[in-house]
Length: 90
Image (cartoon, rainbow, N blue to C red):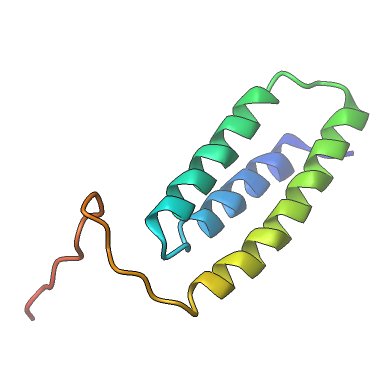
């Protein structure tokens, strides 16, 4: 049986992977998709359905892991909408 703690941990892991995309558009799309999917399914209480959705989430986490690894191999120019990292002088 899948617990709410497991679901919350999966949500956090998926968002963490989403933040690893170097490309702004991929990153924002993935964050929104994760959030929207969990929000749409928050009312599911049937244990079998929760387990099915959880397993789909685990598969998505594996997919995101592969995709973020690949995305980090390629560099993209920053878009205008992206904040630039500030350099701190020590």
